Image 1 (cartoon, rainbow, N blue to C red):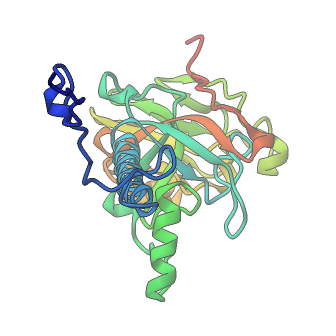
Image 2: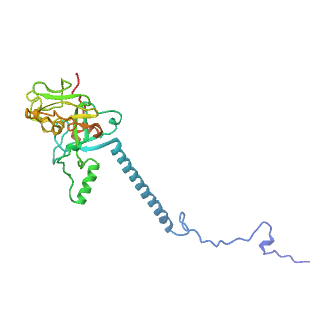
Length: 290
């Protein structure tokens, strides 16, 4: 009889294989990488840099869009003087109205009588103009930055007036007729006797008599609503000496007293500051009913 013994070799049993031992380091707690807890922080750092880069790009885009808007669409302006009272409040050395000026309208049309416009003063209107910026470089930079958003007047002779007559029209003022365009009297509800400290019914010209001025094509005759406190077209015109001796101004070359349409920056649309003054800037045509 032959003795038989069970084989201890696992290979002798079909369908079974030798268990393998892994040489990889064992994983840590669930969700933790084998490299240890330092990896999530390394991943967060690039994400943080990416977010900062996106914010910087968005800031640059916002500045560019704002610059484009100020250049081509609209821009805020500070009213620095009282020449347009009571329509627009302003005074030298105090807080005046901030207005939003529409730069688009006149790309498709021309200024009309009654429009309140912002324009660059012609060369003859700049005599005696002095920079309003500080001599300190840092302070001047701050002033220019604030001017960019309308909190400080621009360092240029930009003016705000109302259009009274346009190219091809004749404007004049006499004590017996008052202010007229093409010989017809104007209706000016924006004039306030209390503001001007003079009643148009008593002093029709609210100053010296002037004209007739034949406004050249492509130019404008402009005046302030605060007629007795406004250095407007009347203050920059030339006069024939004989007429000047009679107290009648603006009878000479009409060019110096009028404003080129090309100098117009835009149309005053809204008062945006202070909040108590929010509202539109009306374009009241003084020639209505003619």
